[in-house]
Amino acid sequence: MPRYVDGFVVPVPKKNIAAYRRMAKRAGKVWRDHGALEYVECMADDVKPGKWTSFPQSVKLKKGETVWFSFVVYKSRQHRDRVNAKAMKDKRLAAWMNPKNLPFDARRMIFGGFKPLVTL
Image (cartoon, rainbow, N blue to C red; front, side):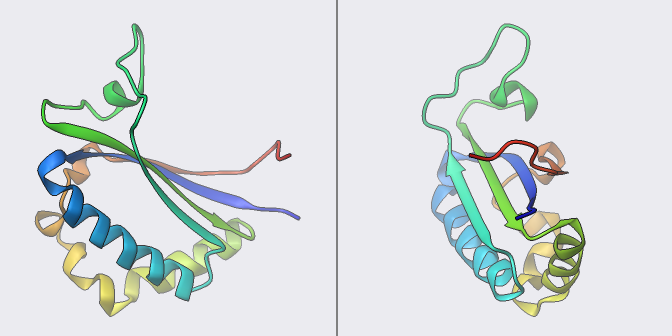
């Protein structure tokens, strides 16, 4: 069965972890309500800076922050596009449309859509 995945990595200040979790729970509900198959948010546990690159380096991690890696699964890219269009218009997310209201620095967020090529 084809799938499509949106992945994102964000730096979250440790003092904002509770706020980020609340936001993630609400966002996950919105995406699931609009048809996403799965919504997963993961906080770094064993993530060290690398010599050349790493998760911390990818978001220019600062002292007092932690990295979150997250993903949303869809039926297809077209399905993703439909779900995201609905989610972005959802009033439950209105407060977060202003980056100043987010519990992390959205300018350092990295994200993208991925077509799975190997699944077991």
